[in-house]
Length: 117
View (tube, rainbow, N blue to C red):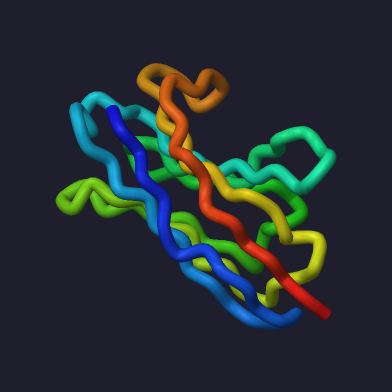
C-alpha cells in the first residue's frame, strides 16, 4: 500500500484546510485509516481515525473542528480542518492499518500545515 498526502499549506488562525490522502496498491485490504501530526521538536500524535465500518474517532484537541472522511470508491482519505489554531501547525501524516487502528502498517510522506497568528 502506498499513501500520498496533499493539501497542506499556510493559513491564518481561524482558517480552514482540507488534506487528502490517496491510497494505491491494495487499498481494499486496509481496515483503518488515520491522520497523525508532528510539530517541530515534538512526538508524533494521533489526530483522527476512520474504520472500515464507518466509525470515526478524534483526539480531544481537534474534536468539533476536524472531520475525517473516506471515499472507498476513490481510495482516498480526507481531513477537513476548520477553525485552525497555531497549535495545529505541524507535518500531517496519513496512516493505514490492516488489522487495528492501534498498529500502523503504512505511512505517507507527510504534508506541512502552518497556522499563523
